[in-house]
Amino acid sequence: MAVLDLKRKLAILSDAAKYDASCASSGAQKRDSLGGKGVGSTEGMGICHAYAPDGRCISLLKILLTNFCIYDCAYCINRVSSNVARARFTVKEVVDLTLNFYKRNYIEGLFLSSGVIRTGDYTMEEMVRVAKSLRLDHDFRGYIHLKLIPEASPELAAEAGLYADRVSINVELPGDESLAILAPEKDAAGIKKAMGRMRLHIEDRNAPVKAGRAKPRKFATGQSTQLIVGADAAKDGDILARSAALYGSYQLKRVYYSAFSPIPDGSARLPVIRPPLVREHRLYQADWLMRFYGFGQGEIVAPGEDLDLTVDPKTAWALRHRGDFPVDVNTADRETLLRTPGLGARGVDRILQARAQTRLTLDDVKRVCGSVKRAKPFIVTADWTPGAATDGEGLRASLVAPQQLSLF
Image 1 (spheres, rainbow, N blue to C red):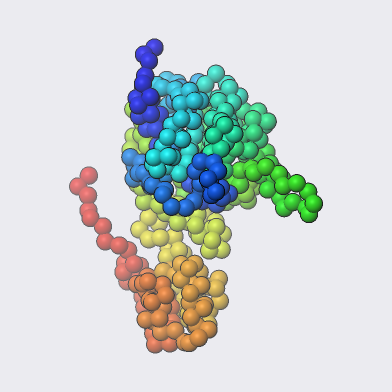
Image 2 (tube, one colour; image 1 turned 180 degrees about the vertical axis):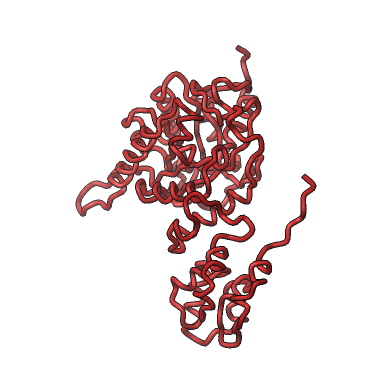
């Protein structure tokens, strides 16, 4: 086997990691190196951002420990039968890279995933060794996200939580049936058990401490997962139903949606073109409505149906419920305003504060929300009413952004 230098390994293993979207650091426990102690912090000045090849903004060293893998998942470029260049970092190489990149102000932390080599336990042990060395040997206080191997022992998963700020286990595909077909070596039930155990660990270790008792060591504050969109026939309604169940059952911080990328020498069971990126975008918007705007999954899109890609999910809902509009921004409650197209959570809070002082005009709403273009047909203000526009046949067309036609 050819011996690769560190630069070549980094090129291979950072490129292989770009398909994993679940690497955000939001909501992580704060660590800092104030007072000259330790290395790194999860916030503060001096943090640079990097851009992945697909355009996502990241500020983490996002790599795989190795892209060797004993599994043969049809949708994965690192599957054992894939004809890609292979590489593997040592534990020390990952630790040194993380520290050196941090000190050069390239990153704010580490996202570490891996193909499964030998066994789940062996792979997880290596990943835990990286995080443990950073925390204990080098007093690293930056952000660490570890991708757990579902087959690894519960003890190793719990140990990973001691050194990571966030952990995640990828569900991979929205349906268990699809996982059984495209990744027969993966165990959907085992993935759920691993997520359930981690939920209990997180709740137990982060529970409030009774007075007089010693504060336990920091533990990962949350877990997340990723669903691949477009690799199987799952509709958007099925995907969001799965997300709603995951949020409810495992208290996940986030479900990430990653549009399937066709891979070289891919299986004939997979699509040859990737789904439109706007589909991924609409799923994130719908996910946001479920988590922060009080929408139930069934209100957004029914199982077996797809989201409307031409308008955002909240506008699509409002167009189906025109009888609920227009709403008076000077009297409507917060929940009603949150369901109004064009009004975000921050804008609604500003409206509630401002209307305590005066009756709001359309310009006032524009001033606190930034724009009223989408909200205008759905709201009433002190000086504006949409009249029959809310029920007009041309309303939907007026809200659809014009698009350049494609020749292909």
